[in-house]
Length: 533
Image (cartoon, rainbow, N blue to C red; front, side):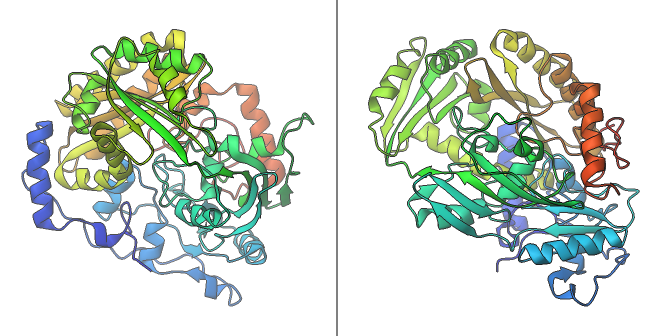
């Protein structure tokens, strides 16, 4: 198997060498106007503190105490995580990484870990960008349960268009198996290569598609999870009005209520008809109005993504003179050219620069697509060449979006200038709904060597404050984790926090599962400690 980086995104053999980094550093300085002349190389893996517990003989074969494995499972892949891993800073590290191959082994691992008084952190692909798989600094022994060996499509129902899939299946792995049945889950987050199904469910992940089925919520038919108090499994149904849905409580639970082992998912036949277009708008707000008109018309394009002019320039999708609206339709049985034509009637304030049928890819869309899929890899390079990169996303109703956009851009830019001296804040709409949109912001700024985390924290705090003060959600699809916890506490109703804490105590009396994420270690609802607080 290819070796994964212990400190950053992706495979170790994809890490650029020093000469390539120097070339990239020069290119980025010319393009962005900042960055280091001499890039930094990642520190070698330090010797980690010894593991504070060892698995029993019956579980030793599926557990690892190896330092590199422990390091890779101790952080997610946010900018903050990558900086610390890049520098070899492992203040918080897991003790044992267990990789069960079936539910029997999962039960045995969880029973042992809780009996040993350990903190237990469920782990999918390790792609969290919000501190979702990191143990608290004051935790005792930590056991990480990596679900990656449970990665099979167990059943495919082509009558009801559903599939029973194990939680550890990565995006490519489950799509490969579904393709054998002519099916697809059609859920493509930016972390698609490594994200697992269980991780997507636990974090309420959002996919690439902009309308209709966007969040993983939309695909879930039923979920099976192991809690310290027993198995939690919902009935497989197309819909139900029977009280509060068991699935809804597990969706977004971030490993605090149980370890998801498998799920029945709504799938579909693979699309064979596609049509897409790129529309240029000299004014951002004309593009916003067009996106809103398209989705409120009843049309449901697979993609309706608006990129502001500055982001188009930075990602080489445009020259910076226009915002770009990417529209795409697809179907497994119907021609979609007419639907695209109908959507373009709402874009009369813009100019269609590219229009394509299935198999054709235009320059702007192709450049954006490449930027989208390579962005997680670029974060590692940005760290090496002295560029702070951070993204944050939210959702807001249409009538509040102008004021929301203005405040978030203003507060974040002020923080960037104050903390970094220079930099950019750009915006795109990743998802659109009839009643609102999901704006996604990107920050690029010059880093001061050794002070990156303080700079990042200042920008993160200002951006998050602006989002909450303006009535948005602290996250549309990146989850809460530890990094968003202070703002999540401000967003959720206090009474709901108490109810959630009570549910936590019912299924996890010892508070062993991912304590401090969503809920305090003792099962309390508020006041969580966070790396951002």
